[in-house]
Image (cartoon, rainbow, N blue to C red; front, top):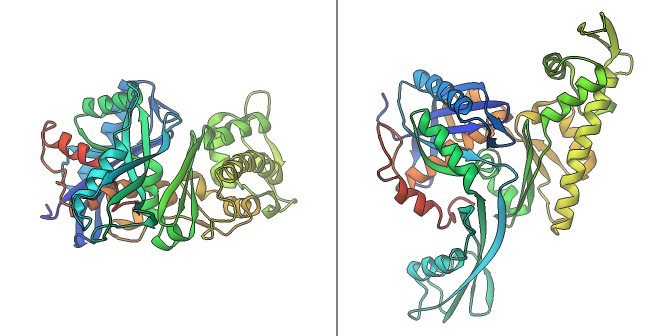
Length: 416
């Protein structure tokens, strides 16, 4: 058993549930690293588009993934950093103003103006998840990132608030509790993935992170080092599979296998002469079809997803401002040709985001785009530990959790 602080992460995706247990080490508090001790991976049951639809099924998936990770790690954390996403997520800007108590701005002044910005009324059916300062204004000087120590009489802040549906959050926590664990903190999945696959230069220059999941596609815009815009499209890899079922006349199971073995998201990459054997199903016996037909079906669906993201990014006012281009992650980012198609649609540089930096131990087991969220959640926990949080080892009940959650809901200057 390691003496280092332990963090545990849980990513409940539409298709798979992943748990990760890691030790926090490295140059604390500025540059924490993770030693991956254990990873658990199982098929998700009881979840639909990021929302729990069957608590009992979701509980079984959570328990199976966490127990597998704990057995490999030889550790038993009971508090988890848990990812949350879905079309119930909302974001908005809020501002705050405060008079400076002395001649020089102090940390207390900054905390006070941040509290003003986040104190906006949240509807009863929603809860505040993250409050992220964008920039500060001292008197009339704007664009300030850290005003502490500056001279002024009036301090203003612009804050990015992320809220989630109360019911989806409560049902997720309930499923985790039934599995025998405590939710230390809910974290927006795209923000967690950003910690795992984006670097500071990309966030400064401007980048859109696209997470290609099974049930939905999440995208997040960073510019000048801060999150500026996020959105969700309720279409993902499952829609591609359904298209193959209809277009090729195969079962759902066979469509998944064919997609993994021969799928390509960019039709020009496929040799028109290549044919693949189709598994017999229903009225169809053994047959062979051009791989180009499969690529065409996938290409059309992925093209639709990327086009919708491009339109939304344009409407948000970021066209021409994303000099670091596009980063693709999530399970769908492993599909052949997806990078080439995205480069064609966005007309920008595109790379595949794979977690790996800041990782030791069983790092090779999570060096795939599909593990970006789980790794990012663990890195988020590592930063919490480095900033004075507590590890998730050997704690029963919710004592101490409320205080940590309260702090998490204030501002995340050190994260995003």
